[in-house]
Length: 524
Image (tube, rainbow, N blue to C red; front, side):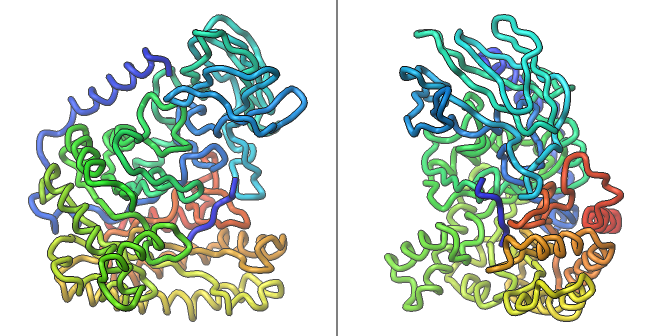
């Protein structure tokens, strides 16, 4: 369980489309493996990506606008006046009401809340747009020069995030196709080079938060409403499949897709066809139904509970929920199998590491085990609610005593039980997520001393040693591919799961990151 803060022109689209097609043209001609077992044996370590939103310290985009916040209607005297902003089908401002302005924000997350803070690129940003009207800047951004369709702004992250304001638009030719290009990046470029360099250190990229958006839930239903390259931003409706595929083509990482519980069969089919057409055929494809359906804090749990009840799958509602999840997993896998060759397709059945009963129920659901390729669990170790009774009085030594002697061994013991179940059905066990999940709970969540304690524990060399031990126990339990949660994310009251805190963190000082790289070096 993770916690987050509650917080192109037509020509450019053509350039991006050309890049995507060109990426396909230079792909390898054939896979480098001949069976699913051989495929999995080559993929030892992956990472989840942080949400594609402006306040998270992972900065994947070369165009900061793609991660910007939805338009805020205001005026020169009111920050948010509650009025609706008139936008076109792609999300660009089409018109303004009398006295109305439309604001959006980028890199607007406080470091103390786990946000990006001042850890984003300083320097000159090129702002490109089409149409006519008035753009103003605020926060950390100040205008340096302006010409039709092109502004240059100077950004000093120490002054906060970037605010972009549309205060006037020309009727019939409004401002649109805005791009805010990071220093050192080019117009039409998809990814931040620093982000690409980080991703190339892994084998698998899980796109759960780019597809489902746990910070802002996104549930795709039909292909017609999917995010596209033409969408103004990808922070509100998910990242286009073409962009996720291109990231994998550029990094050589295999994609792990999480299909929304609301996605209809046509959506799944067309999604799979895009993947088949554009992904390097040397790469496998991991696919999963939703994310953590067992977790009743998520809407997908309630949805699957309703489906399981309507189908009368079991008298026990929890059992019916998990049986429906298993059935839908098989159905989605079967749709993908129409487009992706069997030696490249890994259909993942998401289970719960801490409760092997869930895996047992799903694997016993008729015809399910034969329609999936791996059992996926998430071995997290953390301070449970009973452990946190005396959290304000704890020391870092006491935190590690509990984690080392009780909680890590306990979760890995239950993980091993999942591994035994998987083996009974001749399935590998892989990890869709995992690692530490230290979060202050209940009355301590906003307690500064408690959060500092948990921050310090995450930076302590013993945390890296715990990761080493976790991997050892994982392998002993029969675990194969391990997908860490998550790549880059700052520390704060909502969690501290990033292997790196910021894009500019010194990797040599990041103990969790170093443990991940040690594991990868030992399991290339």
